Image (tube, rainbow, N blue to C red):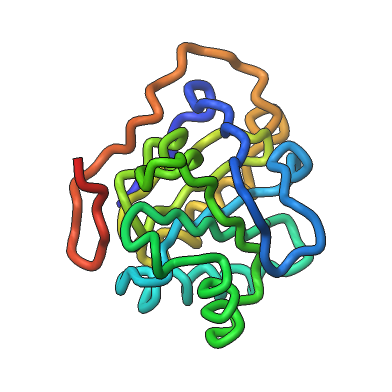
Amino acid sequence: MTALYDPRQALPAPPLQTTQWLNTPHPIDLAALRGKVVVLHAFQMLCPGCVMQGLPQAERVHRLFRNQDVAVIGLHSVFEHHAVMTPQALDAFVHEYRWSFPIGIDQPDGRDGIPLTMRTYALRGTPSLILIDRAGRLRLHHFGHLDDLVLGAAIGQLLSEPASVAAGQDDAERPSLEPPGDCAQGVCAVRT
C-alpha cells in the first residue's frame, strides 16, 4: 500500500505553472484551495495508462466529491510528441471524453523538454498522482496508476486528520520531492 508522507515532514506544494486552463473560467491557484484536499493528476492525452486508468479515475473522484472538501485538477504535461499534443487537440480530447474537472496545460520549457510544473514536482512520467493536504502540503507522490481503494483511503485519511495536523503546526525537517517507487506497466516514463 502507498503510504502518505508524514505531515510533519511534508513539503509545501509548489505553485502550478500553466499556460491555459480548460473547464474553469479562472486559472487555479493552489493557495486558494487551502482547506481542501487536492488531487492533482498529471497526464498526456496520448498516454495509454492515462486514458484507460488515470483520467477515468480523476473523473470519478471529481464527480464523487463535487462541491465538497476535495478538488480534482488535471495537469496536461507534454514531454513527448509536442507537435501533435497542442492546446487545440487537448480541447477536442477533453470535449470528446467529457472530462469535467479543471485541466491546466503545463508550461513548456521552451526547448521541447520537461514542462515546468512536471520538473518542479519531480514527476517521472505519466500518469502521476499528487495528493495535497488541506494545509497545502505534498502528502502523496505516485507514478503510475493507484488503485481506487488505496486512493479513496488516502483521501479519507487526509479529510479526517485533526485540525492541528491539517494546519501544519509542526515544521520538522522536510524530505526531497523525488518520488519513491519503481516504474510499472501502463506508464509513460520521462527519458533521461
